[in-house]
Length: 405
Image (cartoon, rainbow, N blue to C red; front, side):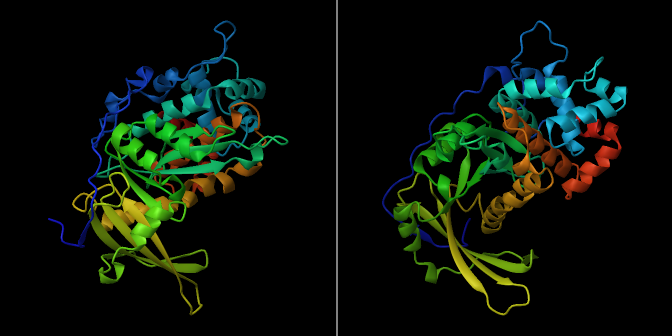
């Protein structure tokens, strides 16, 4: 029984749930996450999974299987490779037995081969295949899988007046496994891309966290009715009516029900506290059941003055399934994604200055970096740059990391 915060009753009833969208038949072999993670011995290995990625080349004249090229690239990136040239150099410098473990039996693939193949590979298809493979292994230690949706522009891939590729990814909280990634169409924006991304991955039973841009009724319905997932959404001024209704709640009468430990880093300290209301009906937003007020207080270390910011969020789960401590961890986990994956891609892999610009190459390289960051974190490494250096010194360990994914 939930007694932690009062209920505000309004007029409308939540909308009924609908049906779930079908899953791509070529990937039905992969285990679906449904709250219980299957034994790894029952799952296909990485090279077998990669067979589902469409090969853009004609059958005649192929020297290397596409899964083998992808595996070699993942190994090279896990050891710190930042470009197609660096991947080719890594392959040329490792013992032959290392390449044989990835399925490369004879000639070492050249930079030209790697660049041409990865420039033509369908980046969205590669993301779907790798994402579903990794999703089957995600969330083993959690009651409910938490997934953050966030976008990033690959600034270094801009050519002339052409816009730089913008990618939207779905990333697990904690170990930052990228379950899927989609490229935003040149004349579109993130909002429809996110819905396309969510429909393409299996997030049944998960809770998805999004920033204010994606606090949209259509996205909420997509999550509940098509993906059979839940949401936590930040509410800001891009939804003025919803923000006004949330602000008008009697927050002065609501006690603080959870406070995060003080965080210190980057020269400042931050403290967050939470007030929560159960909303039975009437926010006029699909499926919303809880409203959260987050009070964020910050100050520069050593300074006396605190600055205060109030942020609001809504959640589709009732308090019995999303108590204050869990809600706070989801909100905090979403805000940490920027540092745990985008910052690593920019600083460790120097993504914004990458010379990979043509075809699907920028998206493919971003996918390889995403996978590698998740694998390193799953292996217990918090410093990704150090983990890459260690694998650079022992290429067999790089193969162990990738093929055990």
